[in-house]
Image (tube, rainbow, N blue to C red):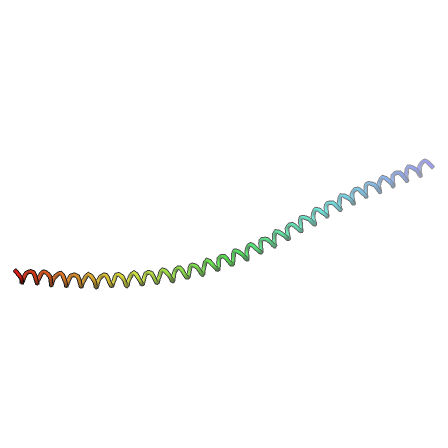
Length: 107
């Protein structure tokens, strides 16, 4: 009965080792599953961020186009004001010359 008991004890020890290895493997698999889930969540968050960034870029581009249009309108307004100023200065010069002529003729 001695060798059979030793053989049975060796088999039980080997079974216990295999059970421990199985538990370790299951824990590692659980860890890997959690890492995969975390990676999937990270990718989803990145995709969401990229979409938001894309929308922000579109909005900024639209704002840039509108700002450029506003700048062009302001440049046109400035040009119009400069033309009006030039005409006003020309009229002032004419009035000044007339005033000088009138004063000269009164002397």
